[in-house]
Length: 398
Image (cartoon, rainbow, N blue to C red; front, side, top):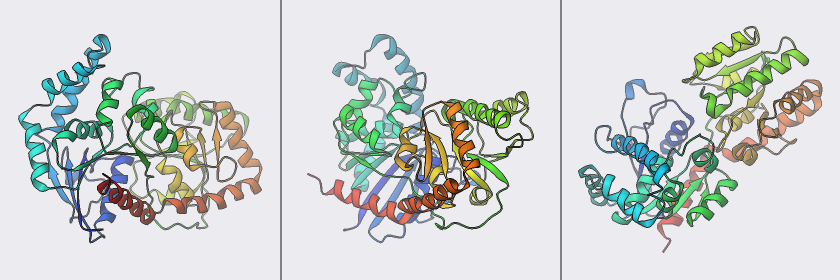
C-alpha cells in the first residue's frame, strides 16, 4: 500500500478512559508502519496530566479553543428543541441545522485545513466526531469514516436522553460517511440498516503478553472500569456482592479498579450494605495486570457495553469473566466455554453463576484455559493489521 495520510478527529486522548486507551494504542502501533502518516486533531492537549502515552511521531494538533468545544455544547440544546418540535427529522431540518450551527469561520478553517493537507482518510473517533465528519463529508476531498466506541443501544436507547441529537438526523449524517467501524456484529447490522452505510467490525486490542502466570489469588472477584453508575451498573455490582456474602461466602473479596464521578456513590453503597470488609477500591491504575493476576474472576455489570476491553485483558491473564449478556460481552464470550453470560440485569442468576465457579474447580479451570486462547484473537498486531486493511479497502473503494 502506498503511503496514506490519515487524520483522526478525537476527544482528548490524554484523559482517562477505555476509548482513549484504545485509540492511543492503535495510533502508537501505526507509527511502526512506514506507509502511514498520522495526524490527530484533539479537543485539548494536556500532556502534563496524561494517562496514556502517545508516540511523539504522531502529529497532534490542538483545537481546544477553536471548533470542537463549540460543536458539542451547541448541539445538545438544539437537540432539546428537536425533542419537542421534531424539526430535525426531515430534510429541511437538516439544512436548517447546518445553516444555524455549522457554517462558522471555525468550520470553514477546519475544512480548509483538511483539504490543504490532502488527507486520504478522515476518521471521526466516537459518535460525536463521527457526526461532525458526516456533516463535512461533502466538503472535503478525502474518504470519511466514523469509528464508533459504544453501542447503538447506548447512544440512542438507554441514556435517558438522546445525547447526539435526533436519531433520524444522526443516521442521515452517518449515512454520508464512506464507512463505519463498529465493535460487534449486533451494531454492524443495526447501523447498516439505520444508516444505509457499510459497517466493518474493528475490535479493541490488548498489548501486553498473552500468557497465564501462576499467582496467589487474593481476591475472588475483580471489577475494572470507570465508576459511572448509569453505564457500568454499580448498583447491580453492590447487589451481587451482597447476595454472595449472604448466601455463599461471607468473606467474599472483591477488588474494584477504576475511578470516576460516582466513586462517592459507590463508597456510600459499600458502607450502607456493610461491605467494608468485602470490597476494596484502589482507584485508577495504569498497570492493571497485577490486579488481574491476583483475582479469580472478572465481573462485568454494565447496562450496555460496546465491547469490553477489560474482559479480554482479564482473559489474557487466565481470568474468565461473568457478564450481563450485552452486545460487547456476547461478541467476546462463548457462554460456558471461556466465560459466562448472564441474562440482562438478573442479579440472582449472576450470583448463582459465581457460586458455581467457586464450587466447581474443574469448570473454572476449563474457563480459565479457554479464556487465554480467546484473548489471542485481540492481539494488538492483529487489530492494527485489520485497521490498515480496512483503510486500504475504503481508499480504493469507488
